[in-house]
Image 1 (tube, protein in one colour):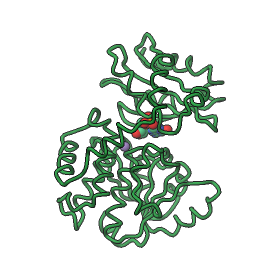
Image 2 (tube, rainbow, N blue to C red):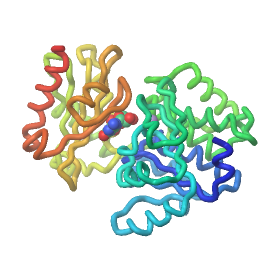
Image 3 (tube, rainbow, N blue to C red):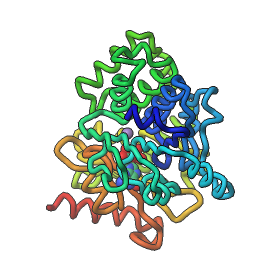
Length: 340
Ligand code: 5GP
Ligand code: MN
């Protein structure tokens, strides 16, 4: 990877739509190395950053981040065409990169993929670093950076911004070490903390800074909206009325889907959230060990992801006629899923 970075003039970084902590953490971790080694780079985001993750964006990099907007389409595409190396992080197929998926599949530019999902697209990428056994794209990026000249296996040589980004990304993707954390994940964390990375500050941002409306919405969701089927499927439907009532912003309901799994009677948890300005319903699926959230998301929700944490989407007018149909759809599909 180093030789490609070295020989490039302007590097374009891409990550997935609705970027989560790991998408930003891995991208910014790599960006910090490019910054420190004097490389020109731009991080192209297919959609806005949640307010709850905006603390991750370093002031120094603001001018290196471009967020997709329809009205700037031509300008953005021109910028991308001026780049001579593409690096995709935290997604396995170009389709996940929103409006950038076309250029990612069609461009002749050399493309590198750094990811931890099953089934990386080796056809559209020239060089693929994929390890589904890794906790996060952030951990994989950390591993790659550690091999880079100038770092040479000493993580204290990664800048503070890089170390904080990578530790944050890994923390969010493992739900603070609760899921998919493997021995190398703990080693990474131990080494980063020993190198002076401020984990307390990260935890403060991630888990002790929620707006009050989130906790109030959470109470309502668990009391009023949570349903549990006889198959042990917990599901929550968040319609537009709910989102207006609690003034929900992007990111406010992040993590809600995990809560029902803490009940012994629940095997799988599904959260369905209507997008405010489209006919799309975003779906999150989580499961306990031995049950594949991924195959459920692939089969019924046009999605995919990891074995125990996946996502997808439904469209009003396609799989479901209207929002009132969603509960029925979920119950039928999951019943079929568990009957097999
Ligand atoms: P979340 O529920 O947090 O939005 O997503 C959980 C995981 O599911 C993500 O890390 C991602 O791997 C995967 N995922 C979410 N949405 C989609 C989707 O629309 N398509 C695919 N293939 N994977 C998704
Ligand atoms: Mn990830």
